[in-house]
Length: 378
Image (cartoon, rainbow, N blue to C red; front, side, top):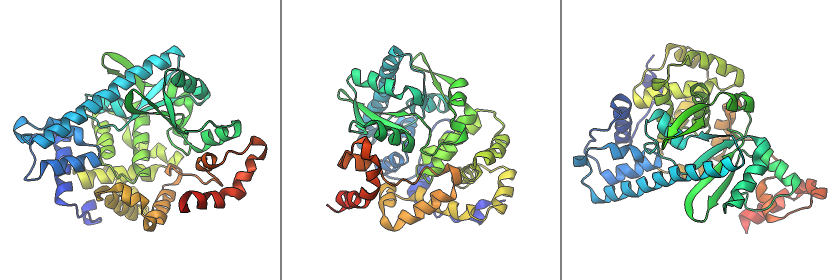
């Protein structure tokens, strides 16, 4: 079936130009030409979708814009600094014999783009075993890292709550402008694909700067990218490009992966991805997806909402809009176990406002309304 006849896209001319860049890369692994468009505006849109590294592939005659060249050079330095930070982190964690996996970033760059610098990244994401979190924290702090999130020292009960409700801590080194995110789960809500024995038992090895690093194997990466993209409403086009390259480069049983996804409630996220690939990159969705689409009453409305998020010029304003808050919550809840959110009577933000002793930890519950007002109305 033709989904374009069912679902309206109405992409802007700038967004269509960015789509053209992605389609050229998918077809030829290069970007040979662009239309009559402002290159700096295209760069800013590509940066919003974390695809600006692809513009480095433009032939030199297309990059005669001094402002564009300056932006690309600065971004290249940023990409190099993330790879350099990966080497630093490896040295630190090796001191404690910590086993870790790289999530996204340079690993996906090498695995899918054949070059770690082609895949744009804002920070460095590392997955470790939850049982080794305290050890990892000690190693990093000893090496001069600062913990940015959580920024306060947590009590035993506060830390137990934090590890249960969140899936990452954030660090930074004062001498290097790169955020390091240490994950102990892939998502806030645990899913069956996150069992540590599965994630760490059969890793996939990639070579970066002549050194071997472990990351998620293709089948697990496929589910991870689909769930991650769906959780964020596919608002950045790079997630869709990532999974499209994965499908192309790795000859896995994708229909089988789709069928097993039912067991963990993420079929809808994967169906979303296949249909979006057709609407955005002109890559036909498999027939088994059309069968699922016809039976799922909510999938069309979810796709329309994700297309709006994807083409929105400023995703942060969309996220922070109070009028859109309930729509986001409704959208995420409709994803089932893929929704990356969970209810809690209080949050770690409350710990930052007032630190209660563990003996009266429960008192955060009645304090919650007052702390919320203090934080947002002061």
